[in-house]
Length: 106
Image (cartoon, rainbow, N blue to C red; front, side, top):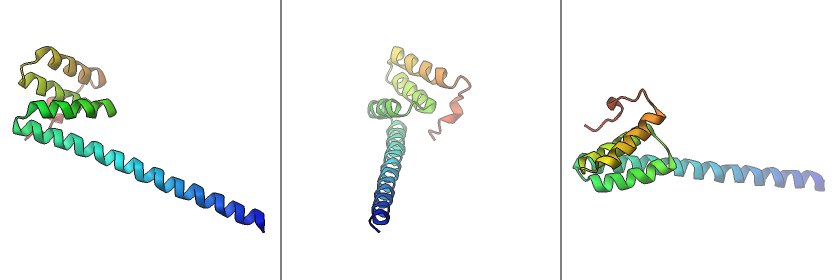
């Protein structure tokens, strides 16, 4: 009887651990989406400085070619052309077929 109750306890602990891991994974993914959307909002308002700061943090966590492309445009709009070229290049390295249409700014 003791062996059965130990197995049940272990199974329950594993189950709870899996639920906790799933929760944190979903939370982190949701936070990434929010930071990209917030950066896009700043970009649309013409606040390229805040957009670029959020996008730099975002691409450190998730190297998304569209985010790199938008980051390049943010620097371009701020007339920081060398930084702009750097991030356009990063987008190209990840996805050479990337088209500006992937950036939905409007």
